[in-house]
Length: 130
Image 1: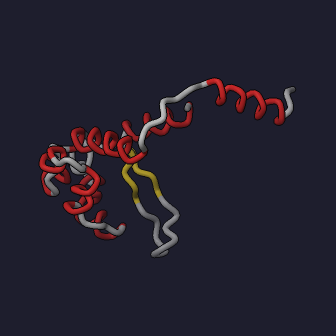
Image 2: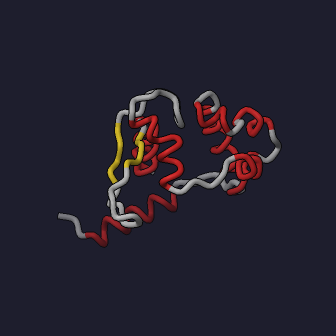
């Protein structure tokens, strides 16, 4: 059985050999946000907050911050996620949400339902491989 030290050493040496392009973090976030906005543009949430106009802006991040209000759990659940939990399609993300994570509910004492999409699961899996 390999020791944990050897495993970590091998992983670090592999990390040094893999050369990833250095990109401006803000530009990287702009690209990711633009991709997500295009994907959710025709959802109820995307139409309510004008994702089409945000996509056309020069700075997606600032436009998003201006257009989309802050939501705490209760407000986003009551206005958006509740509809998803009841089976409505394309509320905040395209398609039907089939999974819901159940949080521990520490802030209000009761458990909370968090929608989990197939795309989210794929992104988590992809990120864990990197």
